[in-house]
Image 1 (cartoon, rainbow, N blue to C red):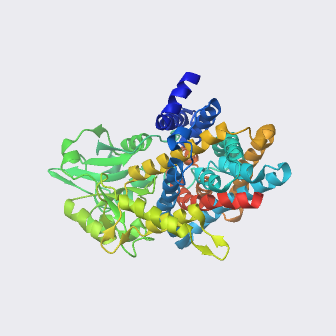
Image 2 (image 1 turned 90 degrees about the vertical axis):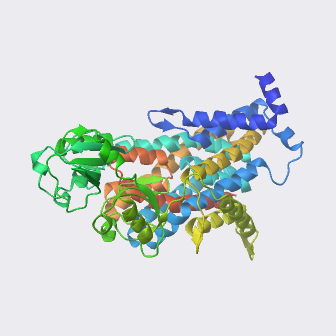
Image 3 (image 1 turned 180 degrees about the vertical axis):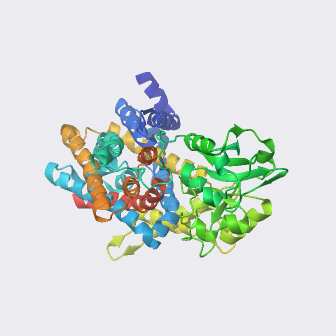
Length: 543
């Protein structure tokens, strides 16, 4: 081991990438749906190898420069958090019906901050251990990154984060499994996936299948009357009758021998087959009608309207097969209100789809094109904003980058100028940024003397569990008893406040529906911003 460490110390960039690769791989390993995640996995590897002697000193010639690779990663990550949250952040604050979602998410955050500070008052974790505890309990990499910029003891921060992060993941999932049962809440009640079947929750990606209309009960009836989207969860995207392939509208009557294309998960498609007829293969249905095209919502007045208001099926003879809000995919129901920068997949003839794009926004540009200037210019703006001071108060590096990201994420189009950063590119920049930052910080913390928290392991773990569970319990009770929200909306908001994507996956399965994504997306957008600012705030309050 020592020989390998010595070799990597002579090639510090190789050591850097070794930590990132090993940490990312560790974070992706899952057991029964539980995984550390790339950030926590990389931190653990960096602490271990830092303790074993891996160092980045040779990379900088023994002198720490003002801008390191880790600091650059920090800038990429914090700016990306703001850029991705921008559209949903402002939309969540603007729409009245989303305030309950935002309120519950913020309630989780505020209560977690209060619990972490209360535990610090009892046990004395200090201004470095306390934000690490909060970041781990909420599985919030932005909190950890922002606190790391200003805290005095990076070892204590990393130690408390590493101790509390595992239960931060597991605790949320355990509550989703058991608390609704204790409260006698049915997570599937009232959702679009709710029906009288006993089928298991659907898993997997949406698929397009073709079915032959054979069941007599659906023949001679309109799609509006049948309401198959409600009863099965599938969206009917195409219809093949005779020599014609088209997008059906709500008044389309199904006839015996029609071939219909339906999109849904495996279990949803199985229900559809039972109601309509056997699955078949229809090459014409798949090839004659163009594939769905991505349209980004940007036209004034469209955001806030429901799909029923837009009447895309009746007016444009097209159908929306999917809606993506950030990284979250949402089922396109009639009641769904579109938000600015949503990406909708629209199927129909080329001319009709073009009409939809002109009415609601613009075609999404090729996923291979990325405007690098959005990141370079945005980070430049963030650095400048971070230097501004209002009296004794300044935004700081993290605050400036976050605000810059929020603004450019929200206003991605100014006149004819537009910024295009595909989802895959945004995720690469965000993930690589935080991993570079955590690698540098973790190696430094691992090489430092043992943290003063080393003798307080039990207290840190207990406090982390309390910081995870207590805010969630209170927020669920507030949502269900005081605000009278549906169980699925309550839990979606709470999971959004916890910024836990693993919790959203678990919640979707428990509810057998994609509806939790709506409340999750609204709460997550605001919570991710607040938790970034909470890092430096807790450092200050705990000192």
